[in-house]
Image (cartoon, rainbow, N blue to C red; front, side, top):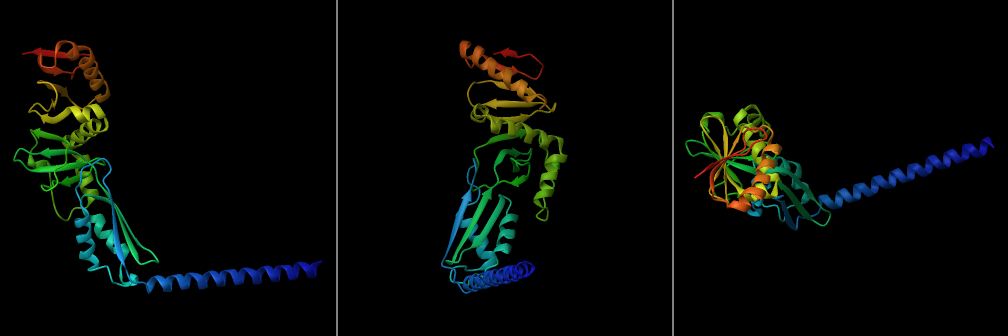
Length: 269
């Protein structure tokens, strides 16, 4: 019995050795095949989420070429996909990038774009975006995004823009600024609500620090006050829209004040 067990162990050991060696040969062959393969084509897949376009395939192709030159026609082993990913990820509008090659000689570039939720225009008419994740983004004049715009008492001094700052530092800039943090919180709430996203056109910051909303439908201003208790404030606004303005008309009042708890105070024209 002991001899049989010993023979069985030896046989199992030999079998595992053959399997491991075979796997190594196959991996080595696959690696050799891939390294010797010429890149035949590059495929771009850009995921914009719910946002408008801020980076095009031509932009992405230009970034890839800045790192790797003309990719098509090169052996795959000469194409540093990790370096391409790093460069793509430093582009301000890119949230994430994935680049890989196949044994068939194809390079796939997957890009996930950031989603701006608000455009901020300062007192001196400089523009910036804030993304859904709270990262400050540069304004792109060639690709304007259809989102809510914030204007009013927004000084340039709250921004400290530098080419050397990382995305994390830009996110920290938003979090550490009470005004930017409030604008991000408010715009994200509006962005995620289908009705508010379609109705609210502009956020105005007055000199008292209150937020006023300019709607697309109706000739009135919505005095929001602070960004505290947003669900309750907008719930009262929606009830007033349905049971009030739908009955008496959307242009009867010039100001709808929802800043005070449990109240909707209106001023007639």
